Image 1 (cartoon, rainbow, N blue to C red):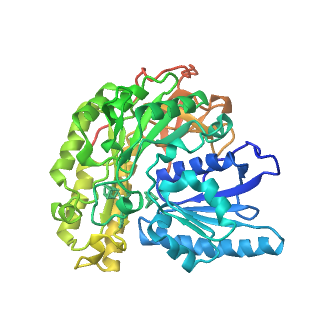
Image 2: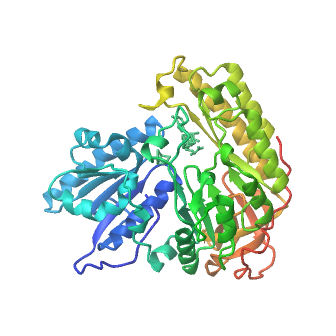
Image 3: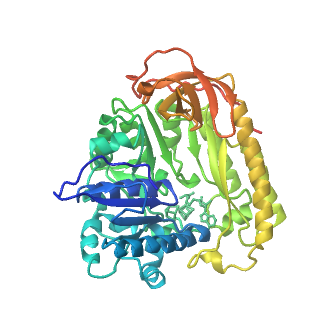
Length: 482
Ligand code: SAH
Ligand code: SF4
Ligand code: F3S
């Protein structure tokens, strides 16, 4: 579920209705869940942390791999039991499926799970309030790709809702994908690439910052393919958008994700050199280190292209570190292809990485390819790759000891007096501080490394709260490589 809690009471007069939203998958689903909560808040709904007493349960689904998609049905089984129990108490529980499984499967969901009242695809969330009303009369399926801009119709969050969500926020700037990698469902579930206009993004970021947000991550399925309408009527690139946002007073940090290596352009490399607010950490998926696999995946870049992009980024911003995504066991992957992936990981020395077993997805070209790799071989390769990635990550973290990072203090930590913050590299950092420091960026000397976080102590109690995006992030030089 999202950790969003709205304190806004019902605006429609009577007792507030309760909505429980559980999100699977990527950051865009987290953002979408917040926007759905905002839209429903305007209709008198408040969020609840459990489905038990909810009037509306929304499963915001992910279709990227089979396991994620199937999880929806086991969850629906459990929620149907709650719906039946509510009905026995004379209470109606409405069940909705949103997100990428909703888009991919549509009416099939209701056929397989008849307790579902509504199925709404990602491009129809702005119609949620009217769909809800309609669903009282029977199941509603809406998987249209709307021609209107849904963001124009989605209510903005209240200041209180934004505050409750913390000092970092996601903002969708681009949605959809035209790349059609042969393994991937996203172009089918999210539709064609669409970029939001600059003015609307700036207004949204200003609203967030006004409510206390210090760090914004611009998100999109191919965020660096961003080409939105600028206030001058021209098409703006992501680099130009980042430069504009770095002028927003009070905003200290900017990030963007997920990028495609082919959409890295000269301006974006320069942005990493020129914009101090742009954090020196980039998620740049490569999927495989083998040119043969990259070609079969329709990635349209080679291993050398990827390494060139990495080098250019390091030249622009010597402190930069990378994370990536890998797929093992793509159809036809040989031991030599897999070894090429291992070699690439060792060569780049990622600060973090995600690796997945190839999962055939209905309707994608790779699902019908010959030479599907047996499951046990996929598992063995995954374990080997993950072990290497873990070693790289541990080495990267170990090299942080003794360095001083600017840490954005985000929330109470596990122990009393401890606050959890984030380093420029998104590593959680545990530091002794006061809850009133949340939202501040403080200098922290890293003293130790735990499995999932760094431990450090605050260097000086200087207040950097009013630090603007114009001041440089303090990162220590980190050696790259294995
Ligand atoms: N738009 C992003 C990522 C989208 S999906 C990009 O282009 O990189 C996130 C990750 O899921 C992908 O990077 C890929 O590694 C993984 N993935 C996508 N489809 C998959 C499949 N069919 N099986 C296994 N992993 C998959
Ligand atoms: Fe999927 Fe490829 Fe598009 Fe990323 S670029 S969303 S992996 S099709
Ligand atoms: Fe999953 Fe859809 Fe995101 S398939 S990864 S929720 S774009």
